[in-house]
Structures are given as C-alpha cells and as structure tokens.
Image 1: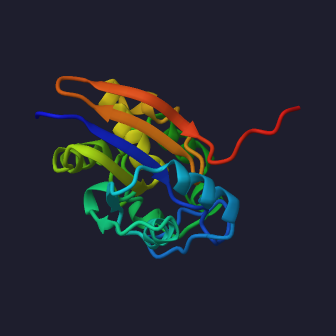
Image 2: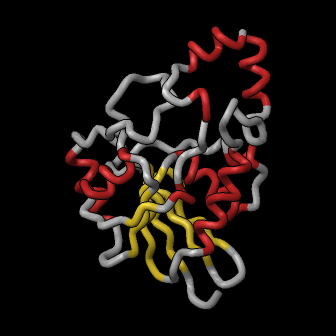
Length: 196
C-alpha cells in the first residue's frame, strides 16, 4: 500500500442505559457531555473519511461530532451471542462462579454461546482496515474494536490487547505506514485533566 492512513479512533459516548450489561447494538448513546464533544470535534481533521460500526451508539456519536459516517460491519463490537442484553451478574449466577471465571481466564480466545471470540473480532477488524483509504480516517467504534486494532498494529496476542483501557469518547491515534504502524496516543481524554 502506498501512502499513509492516519486513524482517529473514537470510542462512542457512554451507553444511555444500566451499567453491568452487555449492551445490544440498539442501545442508545448518552450525548449530554457538550464540552467533551466540542473538544473532541475540534481535534479531528477536517474532511476525513468517517466510518462507524452499525450500532446505534456509534452512529449517534458520529452525528453528534458532525461526521457523516458510513457503517461497516467489520468494526462492530465483539458478538457476545446469548449473553447480549444480559447483566454480567446474571450470567455468573447461571453458569456458576467457577465456570464464569474460567471463561474470563482466556477471554481472547473463548467464545460466549452463539458468539465470537476477541480473536475473531481482530480478524474481522483486520479485513476492515484493509479497505480503508489513505489519508485521515475517523472511526467511531467500540472499546473492543479499538483494542483489536491495537492488537493488529502492535502484533499483540488477544489477551495482551485486552489490557488496554479505552474510555467513552476517548481518542486513540494510530498511523498505518507503508510497512509498519505508528501508535501516536491511546485513550486520550477529550477534556484536560484537572490539576491537583
């Protein structure tokens, strides 16, 4: 590939719903943090190619940022199958604490019932990245998607990439160069950190 692709990876706004739930794609975004949106929007390049996942929360976040984003299945969140829409505490109670903990001991390669592993998500994201143009590209996606792209860029095993913290409305910057990748910043807050 000739030319560089500058990726501006934004995790969607917080879900407007209960905590501790594996949210479905139709979960809405909480778009109320006007200061965070304004600061993040000011940091984004003008006229960038914009992509989001098909999830409602990513498309709502993209619109709030003033982007006209194309939805791409390759960048959707990991599919948790039968666990989607359920609370982690319910799943643990149903499986039993030992079985639930056993799943999370290898979360990169284990698949929830009817779902996909994080390794599967990495493969899907790799296919999506191959289709992106050179130049500035803004992706409004999920924490798992950003971790998957970091795994690709840094050649990390799935379990290692899952160690990254990716907060709502954070910005991660990665450049795809001719034969390598450059990580510019990860999980950057849209607002300045208050001094203590």
